[in-house]
Image 1 (cartoon, rainbow, N blue to C red):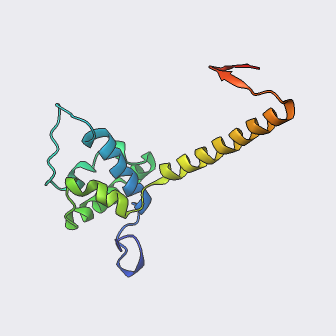
Image 2: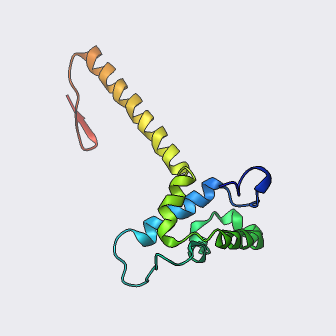
Length: 134
């Protein structure tokens, strides 16, 4: 989508990452599982649902007019609810994936530290809940 970059850039406030996050939040809160209280029609414009405050950072609402104008620009793209996941993938996901990768790499570091401790002491540490037993 060249709406975010280059000569056709139309968004000042919404970034690829923030739109991807909004899509992920919409999917996880309203499209996953079975909800009886609200119907989401796959052929409706996604932009209608992206006007919810819960999908955007609070700082975006300092410039609320710009935010809603940019959401209206998404209407011109005719992106449907059924295309939300594809849009999320097209945008490259969001920051939470990067955070997960950082957490995973820290876990691997901690795991290798535990292995080093075992080699030094000659004893294998067995973890039970929050207590450690040797």
